[in-house]
Structure formats: structure tokens, C-alpha cells
Length: 356
Ligand SMILES: *[C@@H]1O[C@H](CO)[C@@H](O)[C@H](O)[C@H]1NC(C)=O
Image (cartoon, rainbow, N blue to C red):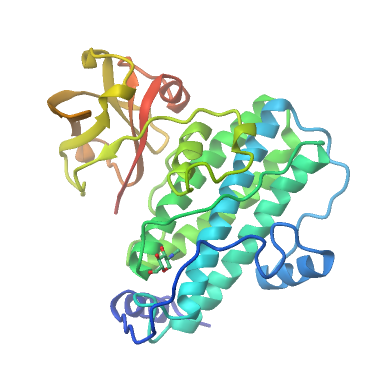
């Protein structure tokens, strides 16, 4: 058995030994359908995907119809899993062809094998969500074209850890909403994926030499925040039927300060033409972290540069142990009982902050 120490050694090596001898490969965001037929694999291709995934699609028959709100969750999950398939497929290709920044030296094969399984597992997650849509007579979600802001393994893993954290928060919301809409037959399966994504998260954290488990209670999120975040990685206008997903897309919030494990004043920016108000005193900077009541901080305007408004707000790291994922948003109002209320009032967000 591989000990945790040799694992950590593999991890440490993975992130420090970039030998970039391979020629520069011209890149295309993975073109769908993939070589294994995804997103429309044949029966024989599904068997192969299952082998790479080390497990199968759920094989139960005749799940009861899903509510309208439940269908929104399935659509969002499909959109997200398609994005994850694209990301990990491209990461797998970069590792396979050892493009500069992706030659890991010792430990390369171990990580390649892990990512190969992740690709297949994400494919099955996507097929399961789209299968649920089809079973309800709803249109399956189609893949977009994607663009990822990373060009080395270290940054790719940091990004994977961040969006997996957003998923881990959002699936909490999906479970809550499935339960609220009476779609209880979907709650167990989502729970199985929460754990699965949590296993992935522990691996991505270990690869960054972080403690595998970030927090006692992971940060929650809301569907709209994930919906907006995913669109940050899609080529605008390239998602064939994203309009069938009736969720809110917020305006972009830029986190200008690189935050670390200390309380500080943080700088943010947004586009003044998207604020819907000139009176910024009606807006607050809100942080969602763990299972706590959203933290509300006052905005101070630093200045306006063209259409860009720069503001500062206190980031109370020490007061609240703001580790793991923190979701920042600018919202109208100054008191929010929970993440749902933040999403209802949010204008700009989500700013994704990861500490420790
Ligand atoms: C793969 O490598 C290319 C070339 O450096 C880069 O543009 C792309 O973002 C990388 N993708 C991932 C998922 O690491």
C-alpha cells in the first residue's frame, strides 16, 4: 500500500519538477464528441468509460418524475459536469503529451492515472444528469466551448480545487432544493457525488501540500453562483442550450487583493454600468464561508476609473477562521440570514477566495 508519506512525496515532486522538453502543442478546447463518444457514447463505449471510472452508472429503473425546480438542478449539474469533463480531458491531454508545464517527472504516471479516472467519473456524472433530463422528456444540456486561464500543472490543480469547492457547496443547495421540491429520490445520489467530489478535493489539496480536509463544515453555495462561475470558463455564445437553465447570472466581481490567512482590508472592482445604482452605500460586500451566517462588510469607494469602480472592504479572516472557500459578493442590503438571501440580493459575484 502506498503510504501517505510517499504520496506526499509524489505530490511535492509533482509541483516542483517541471521539465519542459516536449514541443509546444497547438491547443484546442477539447472538441466534442470526445474520442470515447462522450457526450453520446454507444453502449459499448459506456462500458469502457465505466471501466476507466472504476464503477458504473446507477442502474435502477423508473425513478419518479422530477419537479420543474428539480429539472433546473439537473440542468445545472449537467452544465457543470460537461465543463469538468472538458477541463480534465484537456488536463489529461496536457499531461499525456507533456506540454511545457505539465511534465511532472517522478510521479507523472500516478497522477495521469488518477486524472484518467476523474475524466471517466465526471463523464458518468454528466451522463447521469442528462439521463435524468431525458427520462423526464427534457432536453439534455449540450457542451460549450471552453477556455481555462491556466498553463501549468500547479495552476491547473489550484483551479480544479477551487471549482470543485464551488461544486461541493452548490450540491448542498441542490440537495436542499430537491428535498424542498419533494424530489427525495435524487437526494441520495447527490450525496454520493458530494463524497466523490470531496475525495477529488482532498487529492487536489494534497497536491498543493495543503491538509487534505480543509474545514469541519464546508462552505455552502447557491446554484446561481455556480451557474455564473461556470460561464467564466465558457467561450461567450458557445453554449447551445444554456438558455434552458433558468438561473441568475451575476455581473463579474474582481478580487484585486491576494488574500491570505490574516485579517486585512481587501480591494475589489466592478463595472459601474452594471451596478443598477449610483448610491453604493446601499450595497454591501458579503462573504459566505462554511455554514455560517453571511458576513456583511461596509464598502468604501476608492475611486472610479472609466467604468471601473474600485472599492475596499474588511476581510475578517481571524475573526471567523475564513479557511477553504469563501464566496464574495456585492449585494443590495446589509443583513442576510443565509446564502440564499445573499444570492437573491446579489449584483456582483461570485468572487472566489481560497485560503489554506
Ligand atoms: C493545457 O495546456 C495549454 C497550453 O499551455 C493551456 O492553454 C491550457 O489551459 C491547459 N489546460 C489545462 C486544463 O491545464
